[in-house]
Length: 242
Image 1 (cartoon, rainbow, N blue to C red):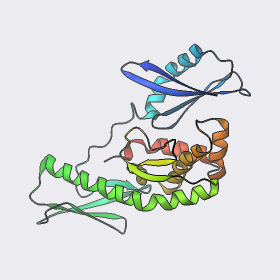
Image 2 (cartoon, rainbow, N blue to C red):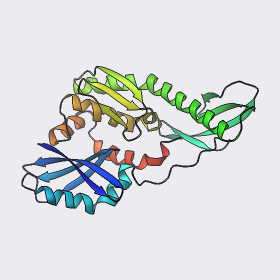
Image 3 (spheres, rainbow, N blue to C red):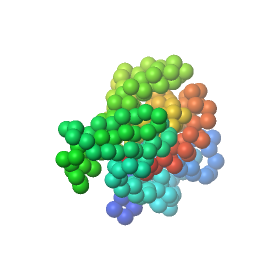
């Protein structure tokens, strides 16, 4: 059985779901599976007040792993020598100004060659370059995610209704009740092994809603080491940003 709950810590609200497990001992376990997904595994008889109290005690840890109070993202200037994440690797930027009318990005030999109109400067230049990179990542996500979804879906014996690329700032991905998968375009910054975990994480919801033991058993069918990959994903944090 799964319950929903919210506790307030300072100016922040922590939303969580409780999975009560009959076989679980007296201890509570809190996990942050992805930004916005906080799960509390608890014995069936645990009082709700005890659960909320435990969540509050772990609030700083939860917020750190939940993206609420994580390390500040780097201040991008989009100049030569900076790097951005792509498929789990840091890719260096080589930037030059040209007479072009718009920012262009070329990826080759694991380097970003960026051409920026000489008419742009300051914040206008940074905003235009950031927008161009976001579109580049969106396009790559749209190209690469369907094949990975098809492969993992085959392992789990499910078929999603569709795949959408969105700007979900609080989540890596989500699965709607009708079977549509929505992926944050930043997913494509992660290593392929982590992308496969995220894909399995959402596809498993086509069999089991919530994050019960049965649900994680489904995830394990496709990703046996999902716990290790989940930890690695948490470490990606502020790097997956423009």
